[in-house]
Length: 199
Image 1 (cartoon, helix red, strand yellow):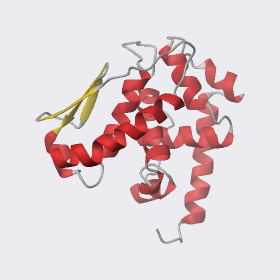
Image 2 (cartoon, one colour; image 1 turned 90 degrees about the horizontal axis):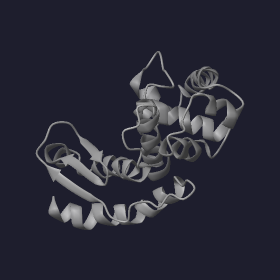
Image 3 (tube, rainbow, N blue to C red; image 1 turned 90 degrees about the vertical axis):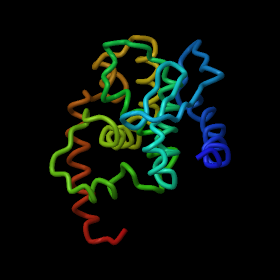
Image 4 (cartoon, rainbow, N blue to C red; image 1 turned 180 degrees about the horizontal axis):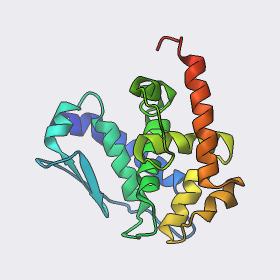
């Protein structure tokens, strides 16, 4: 694991940290210049407190050739977000934003949250506020169809403690539920149209 951490993980994090900082700006915000990653025996996969990232050595060991680096890129987003413990920030959006950067910016070719992944899951109902990959897909759809800066703008609002549901209408002209309904319909059409393709 040390060889992987030194030669695979460290270069990825060094390359992607400034990219994530650039994607999530807000006025007067200076991102942390240092962060720590501790890989140790623990339950779960990974979590972040401030600038300290903790990851399960068991899980990383199992996923070292697949999802480990991407999961830690997700946690790097949490380092840059610096939201603190604001109860007004919806958890689904916090985690969905981190997964958006992971799956649609860092590793889009892995198809970890796009229509290819959704087709494989055979999901019959999707909620835009489900969190993680599903919300990442929703955010990508909103960015492509309504406002390319939506994730950065919402992250800035959450960082400043100014998030409220009205921001969706301010940025896109539609409420989050209205966008969610459009997204679900569009997704259903994409899945139906692509169902005969081989991936």
